Length: 164
Image (cartoon, rainbow, N blue to C red; front, side, top):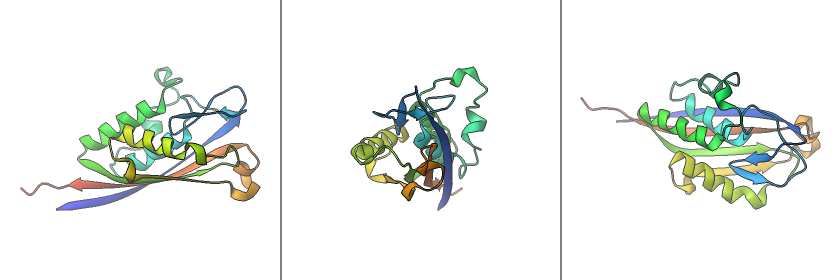
């Protein structure tokens, strides 16, 4: 018998000058980047939280606290690989992941396929199981004012239950 569990992840980072903009493991040419303890890949962070919660593993702040110098500048796709390993160790398989990026700038369409491929590789699943969309929010809110980028992610996990 199988059991399905769904998780939602949300993350936001402030836009600043002087940092690279990394989304879904892709360095995107831009005049600003995201502020954070790690590489601030807000896409990978939201995906990690979407995977961790249905597996009962907390959140990325618990696993990779921003107070730990070991994670300063960390590659978020490496952290996603570790999250995937831990989720698998709990007996879960990733069915699919759906991501929505809220960003006024830059336009993400040219990078979308590569971001999905990077996420899929980090999670060890086919790229067909990862979707990613972006919206501008029409200039509204903190994303519209170019103060930050926010991401929502949803993950579906399947747990194989023993038949003992």
